[in-house]
Image (cartoon, rainbow, N blue to C red):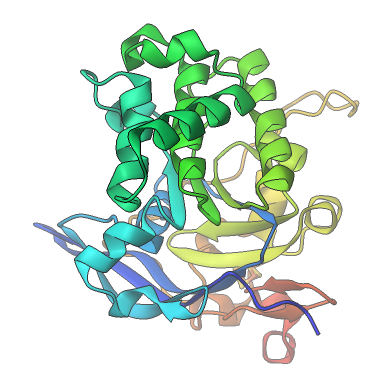
Length: 326
Ligand code: SF4
């Protein structure tokens, strides 16, 4: 029997209340994050992936609100916890790494203070000596030299700051790290080092990672499975290798074709037709239908739901259902 998922997200809706009306940035999204995996969450800008990342930790702030859904993390529904209880889940069980760590790190606090304060906040009985010892050991594992622990965040490079963010998650032995575009501000060499580090930490700390990114290359490099979002909906999820070699959803196909490939003779970059829709007034039926080269009559009328295709993949597209072919 397959192991129980670490995190099961069920029927999640997240809305933004705006002057122009309510915008549903995440709609009816359900998927599992399996223990020990690195799951990539991809899609174009404003498809809802970052909103979802924050909502999973209930870190979303007004005007965003979760209007429906369950967040079943390690046996508990996070939606039923109080804000105080959630504070212990954040950092203690789920850590988050953002694109710009400067927004999360206190500019007037040294790195060592960030680490020891985090440990004390969640484990008040830990002595100062023990907190310093753990912080030092962790920093060493993450390639942060001990003398750098006395520096302030602004004295570190982007790559080093990302290491600090991960060390804050690991200081409390988080089971899951949600990393939102963690490599976007890094150059390619630092990015490659950071991805290597994630791979090592995942095994050493038995970590599960949700990697939110628009960078398909990063997903190919490091993820076990990939989930694809389009206009607030999850449209495909499955094994990275299978999806990359045989994408089912026309949007996934378009995304993958848009990535430059030096092995192909045709060096002209493929450009997907059109642009993602406004979520204030999304298209009827399948949200991708105005851009889809395979659209059928049913596509503009009815929204397809995720269904199993093959042994371990799911896709939301009428091309793979009897109803669509009828
Ligand atoms: Fe294209 Fe229809 Fe599939 Fe949507 S449901 S992706 S429009 S074929």
